[in-house]
Length: 366
Image (cartoon, rainbow, N blue to C red; front, top):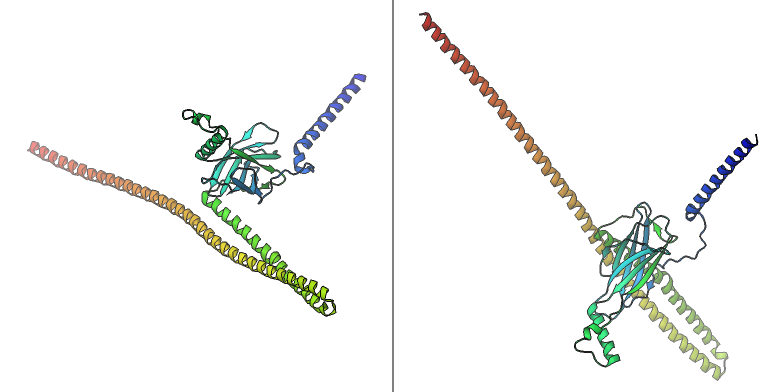
């Protein structure tokens, strides 16, 4: 009896143990989805100039993730701020924080200032991703700088061993950090063609210009106008008090009035410059819209050409099938005609044989 009670108690204990273990595992592996993460956000700021490379200032424009495809896409703007005549080139690598293995990285688009890279095989459980940007300066420029440094330190280069003594620096690097709390989820993220990425960059540039126009028109210009009004009121107040002031006070008031008048002129000048900046930005926006229309039109034309080529190929294929069928039909008709002709020939032959046989029989009977 005791044995049965102990056995039942043990079964309950194992069952409870399994349930608790399962719950703890589920909580552990799904905590990222529902629990509050109190760790500080480590995301590299977007649309902000990032220094750290020798010749280039970076700007992180976009960082997206497709969990279904385990695919990340990062858009970076490169601004050449160094003195090198030849712009540097870039290579990339990526890895998760505190993990030794890296992820495959591929440059899918590149123009004069923009680079788009894709990071593959990123599991949905990732937390912090580091994208390493390596800046490769022109080798000839590096060799020239190395020679100059060696001459400054040693006084001269050995004519035989000079090339071997040159020590070129390693490529400078900058790490862009992606935090899962700031990376955008995009389930439609796929590899686009060059025109698609180009159109995307133009649209982003248009949005940035529109933001600048809004800030200048809605904030900076009204601020200068308000400053002019405020200074004008203060000048008016000082003038109204002049008749009640001593000579010494009047001199101080006149100096203050001149200072405020100069400030008004500076504010008006600043307002004029801001208005000119808005005009230039509007003009640039118009040009970018035209460029976007051209690029989009070219893209649509390419798609139409592809469709036309596909239709043409299909039509040619259908035509070939029709010709083949007609040919096959014609050949079969020819065969049928030949059969009919053979039948007629056989009939004629049979008639001829029969008549000759009858003639022979008649002769024989005679």
